[in-house]
Length: 158
Length: 279
Image (tube, rainbow over all chains, first blue to last red; front, side):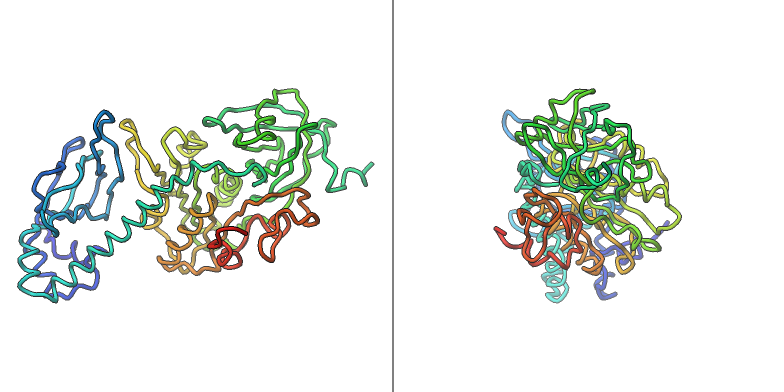
């Protein structure tokens, strides 16, 4: 059976992490697989896991009254899924539904939090990396919110 | 006679051969010169001025294959008086054509490099000509990635062609929509997020970007973040054009005339202008 350590070490999220930290992280990791159409988590449930998507496609959905589920974003190969495990009240804010069969590495969020509390250098490094993902997602969401393709161009353009 | 025909201000009458509905409000029109003469050669990224007699004239990029200039192909979105009048034309009707005008996508410079094409919305139309040429000369390039973003699944332009291109083993095609519906099984998110999915060597890549200005700005920024040199990024600009030959000044964009110096610009030449709210 292949160790998760090299897979995690080669993932962009963990690139450059000190080897001693990678040992801590690998200790919190396990392989998971979700069939297409299943829910990895649902809004309001306790958030205790951080996922590294190895292969597949996951839709982040929000459920709105009388509008049903709306897909906000898809998370795909190489992406990370979920940061609610890091911040109180540790509950998911959206649904995560697999569009395709999805293989991932699940990292125990409680385990990571405890290790981050015990070693603040590790915890700070982890939070910086999660913050970077959050910033990128926020920027993407802002661009999405601008609805840029819905602005009629002038007729005198190309 | 030849003097008159070569006058860049004089429209030549073309006949509408075929009109194809693409997506709501957007259509592709095939045109042939009414006098049976040859269609002037064009390069990918260039545009023509299309004139509906008695209504007005607008610039529209050429979206056909430069290696097969006939028929002349334009994809247009009906957003105003002239484009709506073009949409109303039927096969057999006459339309005036001046051109081709402007700069073109630097596909010669891309030889030996990886190529990343990023298109948003109807911005795929001016890049379709380039895709045709890249496919026809595939061996001359490294990896080729086409990243396309649309508003919703029903706004995806040239859907069948995208599927055909996606079937090419040596062409990576990624499509995303800003807003998915329950039937959509593809990616949801902005087109800039596709950049990290594409395999390319950023230092040896030429990127061609076309879409709304804000999309081009964010795309260029993301490409730079991934290591692509800014001078290797090209964008296609839109501005109010009238004469198309750099005389009237309607399309002045800072020190540039979009009709003559553009529409395709090296991003580094217009980067500082793209952040200005009005110019």
